[in-house]
Length: 190
Image (cartoon, rainbow, N blue to C red; front, side, top):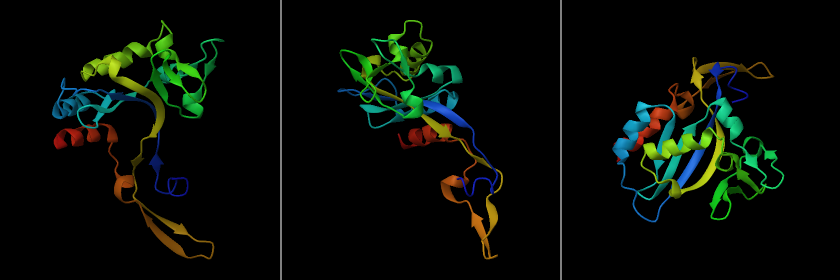
């Protein structure tokens, strides 16, 4: 990306995505794969990736304000740790502490903070796809670099003066947003 990106004119804005892993001991029959795909295509906030009938991922696009809230909080000193942004962590659900980062020993701030704007939005997403809140097992945040290409080839000149034609192929050349496409593909499989 660093070498070819500037030559093939790539616009690459970053987005923060909250990954919510859910798992159940029973089938989650509240919504079919096809209905989940329709819900994903009908809005641009949540993306459901089921892994069978008992587990999966619900990805949630975050606003910049929500991304700032998605941090770990030390329960004793009430200090914040930006473990999710600087070193992506996995907040695992524990019965005694809610969602805890085992690396930094912090708790997921939106769950602990009664004034959280983000936690109710997470619960809204789970309800949208009929996923019981108690099935949420892991929370993590990651950045996605969405790409839009206006040109799919470039000519590179080597140090000895030779030129080389470079082409962007496959997934790297897709100028479409991945978000609705994955939901639709999942729905068609279902």
